[in-house]
Image (cartoon, rainbow, N blue to C red; front, side, top):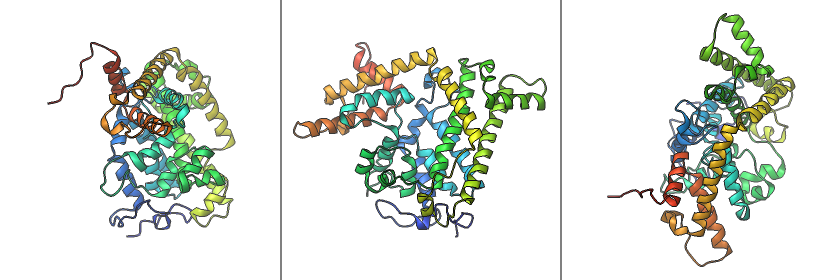
Length: 387
């Protein structure tokens, strides 16, 4: 079966991939990137995303986005755009579903707190942790650690990387050293992530009452589409009006991305996916849409992400992460055995133990982190019974 028939020559073709870290027999009825997607969906880290914060902590409401629903929404947007550009839908879906696997509990507040805790041990960054999850931490196969994903999937997961970390990562970090681009699919997944969280954070912000439509009317990208909705459906209001507006915003961003990216691709002589690596970034918005999207991001940062009610929860989150890290590093025997580093004392052991603690905390869901914190610091919190 020819799985590549619809792909552009500059798309990521499985047959031209740099392959897996550990050789495996071909999947047969699936492409290699379909196999990657399936492995990600069946991973433990993917299931945990259901109980990890996007903006609002899970217990604050059943209808707010989580890391899981966000990842699914990113994959849907990315796959739709990839089809329009004749790119590899399976690869872009795999990257989209895996891009947040390394996120801590409590969203960006958790990451910032864990990075501060790890400052003497190499820091913490969720993109690097996502790669660590699929390369090392998942335990599903007898022949290797991790999920043994294709090079291009792993490359797409690693959106950002410092020079120091890139040197330590070998081939997967080489593009950051050489200042080259990843596949078009990786570039697309990154921007689909932006489309999803900007627009869906508006929805959650309005649902929570922390944002108002009057505030959003000051933002051109929202206001113009809200007016379109009111003209098309006179008298429309409530959730229906919000959904119609956000749906049109997502469509406008996706169409702009498709049209702009197609123009850029056609302007550069691309014959293979390797040509993409030597080109400038080719997937992107028009200058006008970039400006509108930037204003929207600034608005969300000032009015939602830094809202005093959100700040109250993020302040608690930072304290929980910091106190868990301090407790576990000071007394590693509080950790499950798999996370305790054995051997002689020294700087190497301390570094390895800190990284194990970071792995343990980053893998927690929001509610598990809160439960662990209560178990460690609340004298009336009962320990779980095992029979």
